[in-house]
Image (tube, rainbow, N blue to C red):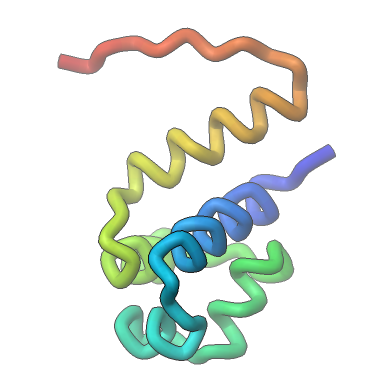
Length: 88
């Protein structure tokens, strides 16, 4: 079983590393401690919505995009196929 905090953390880490950015750089931009961001990325801490949004902004990501990626990862582990619904 994958926990939501683990899926969020792996999504954030993948985004950060694909941008070639360091934990220190993103932590500074998000105004969170380096240790806290590391724990969030490793799935050891569950970030509040405010801190999660700050991390997303620092990475240039939308919160909805992160949640979408997390939903896909969770569905994959559950063996569920997601149907995309256009909200427009």
